[in-house]
Image 1 (tube, rainbow, N blue to C red):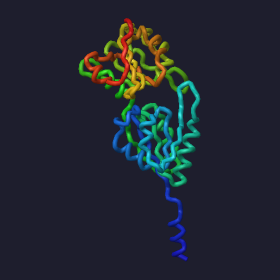
Image 2: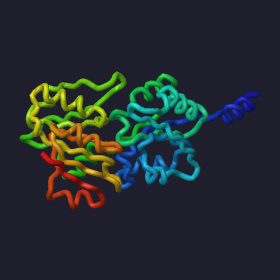
Image 3: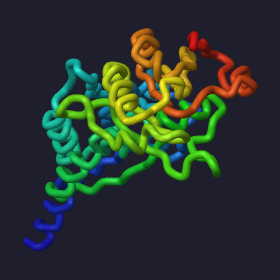
Image 4: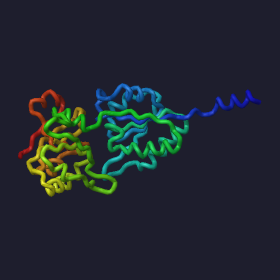
Length: 265
């Protein structure tokens, strides 16, 4: 009888595991080795809309790919449905990779998904990725921090679940302030208005980096005064770099395959 019980236990489904990973800005060269290994080994890959085909091509032949796309102010899979998929595959004993663009912990709702797995008693691992802000700054040949210029760096979003997101505008409007703004295209006029209202100089330099690190990358050097007009020209995912203008000398080397334009001041 004891031997029969041990045999039955051995046939029970092994628990699954979930790896949360950042795909970076979707240039395969910018993946960490850990994320590349996770792609090759996963049974199921639940990926965001912005994860590129070039990154997904590194998945192993056994992997089932499931897009869990979302778009700001647009259609997308509900978060509860995504969480249910993650838990369902894990309970079935699958090796699940939850692949998010950039870094999973920056505006990727990672915390909500981790809470659900923790409540369910499901094991997980988190692998960081290169966030779009770092890729955008590299594209314009700039450092996100610099002694004598900015002692802090703000990573903010243009909108959240409640609409346009309020920030510490007084701090952001100060000379020398640097911020990376995600999901800011449709919030451009709101951002401009709040900053000007709190004393920002209309001539403050900004860089708009669309499709950072990808072959179709585009950089627009602009000012706060022109932010809404120039943001309207963007069609792909973009990061707004407040307080950072492209280094002209670095652009040929930094942007071998991308477009660059400087708008009228």
